[in-house]
Amino acid sequence: MKKGMALDAADRRILAALERDARLSFAGLGDMAGLSKTPSWKRVQAMEKAGVITGYRAVIEPAAIGLGTSAFVHVSIEFDRHEAFEQAVAEEAAVLTCHAVVGDFDYMLHVMTSEMTDLDDFLRNRLRRLPGVRHFNTTLAMRDVKPRAYLTDAARERDGR
Image 1 (cartoon, rainbow, N blue to C red):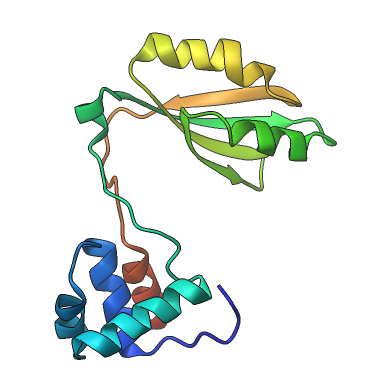
Image 2: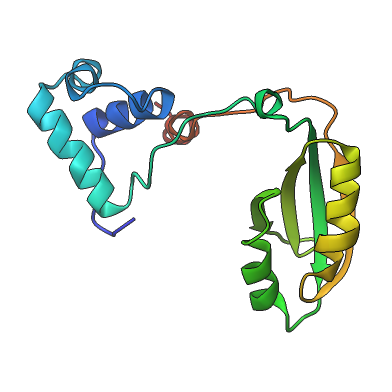
């Protein structure tokens, strides 16, 4: 996000509405934000340009497309291989997210595969061969308790609104 993009209450309402349903019309967004269609559209454009809104996507149920195994993998990397690891892991389709972390490991990955044998293949034949991987620890997710959250809710809580 570019510095200097101050978000007011209407911007925050627009963001919350888009985060829940990115297919809303600008008229619908305006209704939710207390604005008309054109000011709503201009605000969305400004937030896109400023990098507040970085894209739009559909939310897909993993099981509906054959992804039934979810795991979290903590990875330790050799000291001088972080950049190469990050570039390589970005190319791995099974890795949904990769976070640099502080603690006993260097990275935490969220990995999804169709079944356990595919997860095993990923861990043994792909992850362990990525640049700099020293060791890793895998935790299998049994079920999703809170699979999705809204950033706007977390921001509102932070701001005490």
